[in-house]
Length: 616
Image (cartoon, rainbow, N blue to C red; front, side):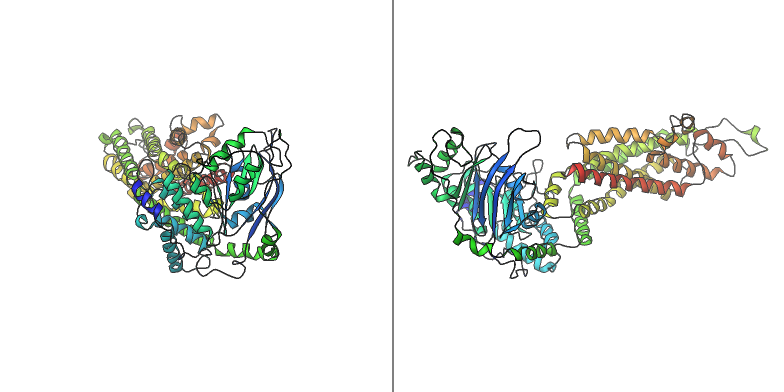
């Protein structure tokens, strides 16, 4: 959408009254209670750093209001909202909801957190993104038609009706404008009907008109009873006027907390001048870094006795503070809203399948890669017309045997492993590597990590099957091996399965830009350990056979070798051939089982790495 569209939408009133902030059909007496968050003596320190990131913060925020957090770069704004949103734990101090002390996990359940970057799946439309979030977070209590009605009203309230069926897009594929993407990010959190909405610099990267339109939207949202807390960087005067409460930070210290409308008067009392033709917010931002501030919020050199305005009175906060016993029931109600784990697996599978159908270019590239590799490997034995094994005849015809050829079948197994590794490695790492930040946000919003991981892996099985089908078909036509088509397809699919699993491991431990290269190298090295060169029999003399058996290439190659040689059991002595290479006969089912087990184990390992490293 063009900037002209955003200019027009900025001047249109935000009709948000149709949207039920508490969620459709889930408002209860507990959920409708007036809520107030208070924080007392909050401090945050990172081990190894001599100074506190935050020191002695205190204040409160009530439902139906907007709290703006301002300060120069490095003042601790993001650290503060991360603590308030339960993403980080304060070193000292406490956060209370209506007098009930909250834990980080409870804060995460209560709040929707909109990060500075717009982390939205680009292959999905606006409506599909919002529907998935709502179905996960509200599917435990609501029928699907109720959720769809809720999302429809949310889309209308966010001003996204004209683009609801448009894909979000990204840098490579243009989609929504910056302001629209930010509204979608907000909608992803509002789809869960949170009681508190926290935004980290929501206006960054937007032009002045789009930023004002967004802040008007947030003000309308707050008037629906949601507590809105946002980090604001250098706001224009109109945006500053939309704030109800203002918190000013400098070097981790609280300079001011109180009504935004009285901030100018506060600094005027301290001796600062505000020219009538200047934006008060700009003057305040110039004041903050210009003086060293004590923890009281006063200029250290001037030593005035005036204390910062808090804007909190006992009369204002008494009603909310008298109901701490209701907070656990509110948290329980929020947890019960979520869809079951099995339902989340299904939703993740459906969403992943839709993504696969819209990643046409990458899917076609994978198909073409597999097909080309099938052609190249098939041509290496095309002239043999399937006669790639020659053994020693059974007695008493040993002396009539021709020169043996034990290695060519093993070499074909090696080439197949290397070829599949090239075709499956990069797509495997892309499966999760492209979405680590998105699903970190979803996990912090309350989505199940394991349900996403399982659903995502299930959604790609059809893609793996089609890739292996193209490769197998072309290889079988050109190489005409003695192995059956069905068995060749089965082991090729299982090796694709293993390489995709290895790609998931690489995605968990590498940067996004390094993942494909690292995965390609890892897959090629592992695929070379199939027992062909060096022969597995030779490796066993080094007492390293156990190491080769750790990798899927050995089990693939053994199954491939046995199925290609077993049809000649009536003619040749197969034990000598298998002993020369190092494989064992008559355990093809065991080989297939090990391939399935290793591919699954790779996914278990990758999930553990994502939990401990990749999603932190």
